[in-house]
Image (cartoon, rainbow, N blue to C red; front, side, top):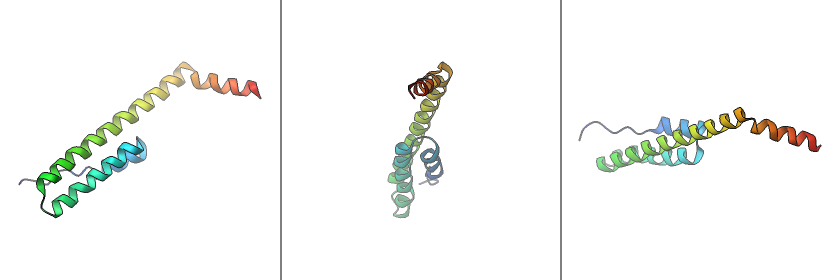
Length: 91
């Protein structure tokens, strides 16, 4: 059988809180399946759930990174400041 597979629960929770809520929730669901599969002796199911949880954690990190990079780019280009100045002028 080998060592139990990584469950990715902590990483999934952190991705949910700090990066991407929907993808983190999918990661948490798959992470919880790892321990429940091991509890009933389904080692292959636990490995598959671990692989899925890891995949969703990585997707969440990438999505969070893209959003942060986009936000930084918009601030550098001054898009946010221009929008705010346009709103002030309308008042």
